[in-house]
Image (cartoon, rainbow, N blue to C red):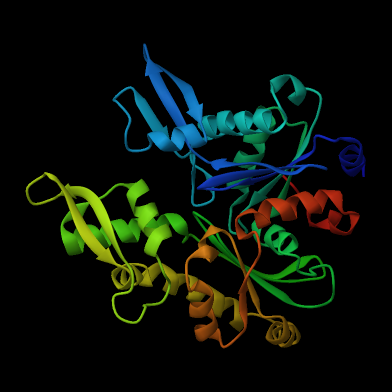
Length: 346
């Protein structure tokens, strides 16, 4: 109980959705205060690698850096790939959220969201990174449960609820009841995989090499989970011609991008079907009434809800504020005593 007593007394308690693509920080009594890309730009001088910029500024450098600067994402598939860089990134985001490093020494308990499929080693890496960044106490919460709380689902009631959280590195599918997880599954498919498939498709179909940022822009502009009637919208895409090596521009249609995204969308639908097959009968009856709730940035892919509804025959809705649901839910978990039992030791 000491942990929660400290939570009750600190105005600087934090909940962090440490995502592959974006990091969102929730501060007690203030709500969401930070939402920036999980990107760090490193500069090498005299053989020593130092952090140059983090977040929004670092993302602008991706694919455009000189030889001595490298813009990287320290997380892959929802877990830490480079613990030293991740630690620097977490410290930067915490300090920025609380107004500077001097205030960080005065607090603070931290809750971090983790994929349900993450291993104990991966969870320990997340906890250690937050501790080394200055957190006094670190607790973890599964992303799907945090997403459900943030989406306003009544997970504390004896009623089944199903949530699909489509993030940058992973998709979390979970059936919840009584503040617990009846079934969960995590597949390493998300926004990053969609970007890769778009880039691969354009390279194969149009002999055009495009960068990661361009692929993301294409996804946001004309990406869709189901094919439109005809070609749909058309977008000009610029890159390097693989035949003659010169800069080139091609026209890409919405129908082509739907074809490119068919594989990752199919994997997400398969994960949803697997969850439904493993759901106990009484909870299945509740899901018929309540439907499926989509959260995460991937939920904003156009017609994703329609694709899942067609495959399952259930009502599917995209949560309001889908991008910040996980961080909102984690924040509510330490503010509301009803959710105390959902926090896990690191």
